[in-house]
Image (tube, rainbow, N blue to C red; front, side, top):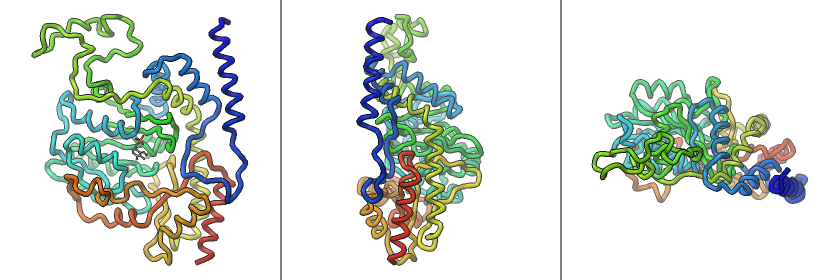
Length: 439
Ligand SMILES: Cc1ncc(COP(=O)(O)O)c(C=O)c1O
């Protein structure tokens, strides 16, 4: 073994030692240990993968990126996965790709995109950034997904796409959505940032429409620190998305291309109308792009996390079931989550809506939980049209939004992430019981 290999092994062994000293979980103490709504779950293999990537010093997206993209593709059953630096970038990339002039039937300025009013702001922002008009529909209570019954009423002669989050991991009614999309010839983008591993009729969500988008922020099913991805089964759309992700350039060479004349062998031979002579293909721009790439160090972590994904999903489902069984007792006061019979849910969190008839309000319950060190979060923006930054945006609404307003007033969620075990959930349930016993 040469000295570099020996040193690398020694460093990685030390990383393992450090992990078990610095990061090993402390025993749970009810009322003293915080119960987060989410968080990164990692072990020494994740730390070693990242350190190895640092020692390799590739830095920009490279071999670990290929490995991570490969694992995502085979897990999801798609032909293309492109890593980006956040879920928000993934959303902007997917929408921008559908607006690219390289796409024959691309979205044009002023076209309408149907989306729920209860959402995360960065599903709406990319529409505005591309001069598209969001058309807001109300959500269903219980699933907190777009109500498919309201889609027809949202249609105009400018309707070109639907952009739907699978809220907190719960799959939208994909049968109704895809049938609507076929009838009206509209694109579908699925924001699956909270739904990695959720399935509808056995098929992974994110793979039904033109694009699925993922986030690897630490609250999500797996993490890269910051990161995201777009997935698609369309080779054409993948090419456009890759171009927009990589500065908008025409060249599709990757880090693996060693030929100085490029993968096509014609790097210096392209004659582009309107450009002088032949121009280096690497510096030919066919799209208005960004640089959305993550580093190879982030990708190394993502790839290591993929090996734990199946266990993570099971833990999330187990925690969810335990909370759901316990909270049924209080269904008189709380609207508990529902899901479609066709759905197999890889839950992001456990959503709760305080009924309007309850003798307490959301703040009473949320403060009680937080004081017991149980973290809570609101259902993202609530009705986004009531948020200061979004009040004056160009938009249409398809009818009133009473459920979205109720969600904004009365809904919140608590954690089911794999860092929580039975003892944590038992404590959460005890705290709920105590709250109701004091009513
Ligand atoms: C549904 C949804 N979409 C998009 C995002 C944005 O992802 P990111 O934080 O990686 O930008 C999030 C983030 O939490 C999300 O929950």
